[in-house]
Image (cartoon, rainbow, N blue to C red; front, side, top):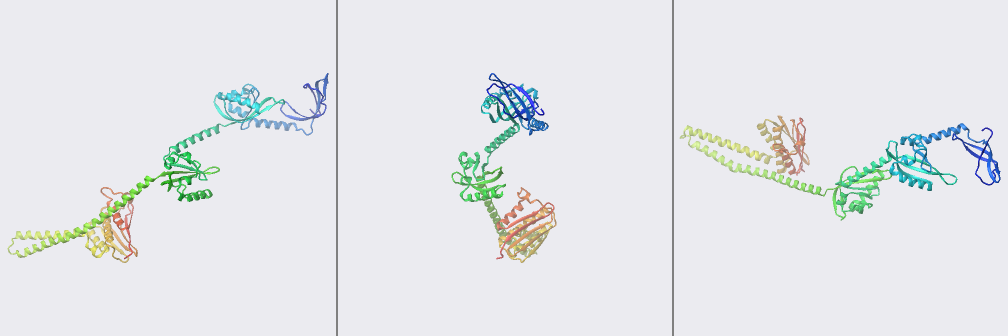
Amino acid sequence: MNDGLRFDHRLRKHAGTVNDPGFWTIHRGDETARRVRVAAPSAVAAGERLGTAGTFAANAESTPAPDARRMADELRDLYDNAPCGYHSIDAAGLVIRINATELGWLGYTRDEVVGRMRMTDLMAPQWHDLFVTKFALLKQQGRLNELEYEMQRKDGTAFPVLVNVIAVYDADGRFVHSRASVVDISTRKQAETELRESELRSTAIVRAALDCIVSIDGQGTITEFNPAAEKTFGYPREHVIGRDVAATIIPPAMRGDHRRGLEHYLATGEGSFLGRRVEVTAMRSDGSEFPVELAITPVRLRDQTIFTAYLRDITGKKWAEQELRRFADEMQAVSRRLVEMQETERRVLANELHDLVGQKLTALSINLNIMEFESAASMTPQSSARLQDSLKLVSETIESIRDVMVALRPAVLDDYGVASGLRWYAAQFVKRTGVAVAVLEQGETRRLPPNAEEALFRIAQEALMNVARYARVEKATVTLRTMPHSVRLTIADDGCGFDPSAARRPARDHGWGLMIMKERAATLGAELTVESASGRGTRISVTLKDDGT
């Protein structure tokens, strides 16, 4: 077709002639198109149109053939290799066109499908009835959107698809074929299934949880309320969903703080209660308040933040803690009383040994000496030896009783104070154990209340006994530091040391000394600290507040 093209074809019968030239678009067999100018006088005989002789001339503005072919190739390539499937079926449901993408999903070749298979042949059997219904509806309406069904591969396996389809009609409005776009939604369906399963698991966990789980949105509206929360707070779930959490389970005195904290987090992303466990007060449906342990976790979604609170009723725990503290206080009071009674008994026993036994032994010694003097001339050597032996036994008994009296209650402690008492005890200690004790005084020494001097002396005594038993050293240091408003006693050694945490609970044969020292310090309201480590010695300090009056 250079300057023009002449052709004849049969036309439909109708009256009249067509003699006016116009512009037509000619579609070639290779699917390229060309716009031409047409002059088509009609041939009419006996009132019947027999044909038309048309002259076609190329339009000066028509697309060059090579460009048209290239565009057609590109369109064909886009159609075949699109990320979604395309297919067309005729009025009988026969597949007349399908792209390579959809064929790839199905596992068929084009020759196996086009003109040979109906659409129902490519669908899972359970979807056939739905297809028939929807196909009839398409022919009537001209368009169907978001259809979901399952297609069936050549190997028999099925996969879910989402289909959007339009109908193509001829000039008389008769259905010619469909044009459908198909998307494989296997991944989406799998994700939806996993999401549903995850939601079911989460729901099961929430429902079965022993702790209360309450979720709210950014406005403080309750969105979740599990069975444990129903039981604890006394509300049915359906009565609280959609209600303000502050007005529902938070005591009136705390509602303002809650709302300010929520607003602050939404504005800054910071919250003092988030990410940690705290103890707060909650409110039941009857208005009664009770202690709970609370942990809040925020979850930021695309357009809002959800807060999930985990609450545990700790009423029983608080009661148990109260009872434990009460019992501990009672035991400490008993312990202090026992220490006081022990010191009182020591004092009484020392006095009785001095006043009764000591004096009588002294009188016995005097009588024996008088007897020795008066009977010296008439006494036989054997009797004299026996008398001397008796005098020696009385003297040794008096000395032993004096030692017991000193151990029970050193007179130097009562007469001269704790510093002198410590020096006296250090001298006695080295004689008994071989461990030398250096007593250091720092600051201006002053007398303390008798119970304070007694307790500090006993703590030093117990600590030095532990040095002799366990430290494996030859020297220890006792320091008494007097400050304007306090007094500190320190007993230190460079021995083998120990793990203080392991000595918190005394065993049957050890650990009681440290506990007794702590109890004695507690009777004074003093603070006792123990610093020790294996191979690094031990340092025990007692700090007693004292205003010097």
